Length: 296
Image 1: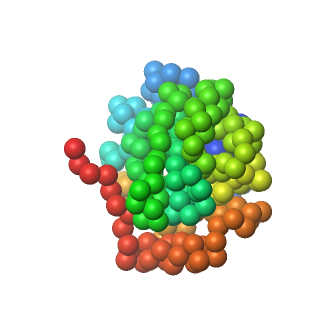
Image 2 (image 1 turned 90 degrees about the vertical axis):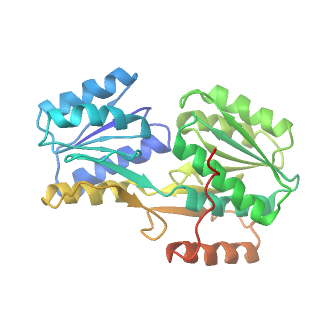
């Protein structure tokens, strides 16, 4: 089973968590595993074909951006399952994995608005992929449920690896009075953590992996995707011959996505924490839906 990542597995976020998922597959079912970091979109097709030709059982392209390559290459290697973490296209051996990242992002927005003293929040993404954009919208909606007049600044770095640019974007938002920044920028997001550590009275929110330990004194919490668990569920399905082509959706009810407050801090009021816990239970039960962006 193989993994293609669009960035380095040292990012302590999106790609690192995916690699941990690959290792869990190896350790849990004894699979032979392989990993390649892709540099350009042309390499998506090239490496999918490489693993298909070698007869790999499952190849995961880690990101929404891999879905077109999976659609092109999948029919050429019908014995290999090609999965992407994002997208919607399904084929006989093509499966997208969908994560309801907007659900815990909404809860993070509630926490952020509650602790903000300036009434200004920030969001910083790597590139403007639809899942990232949706999570930032949910974060803003959660914040507005606490303070309808709150301001939410938004920025995209343009890549997922430039930590210096991530720091610059964070400092620019802090200069505009943002005192909580929700970042989803992988390795570039490490620069956001650095900017917040060097500033006073500012909090940061981690994404994808549990990043609470990166800067425990200033990290409010993390919006987490348990990629290792999700990957293992899919791998077992393939390994045991139970694979069915469909969108594999992972949400709050499956506990693959979750809001994880930083246990080292106690700045979120108890009443807010209780509200978040209650709302999480309602989301899991299907009793509350996070507001979706308006259709243009």
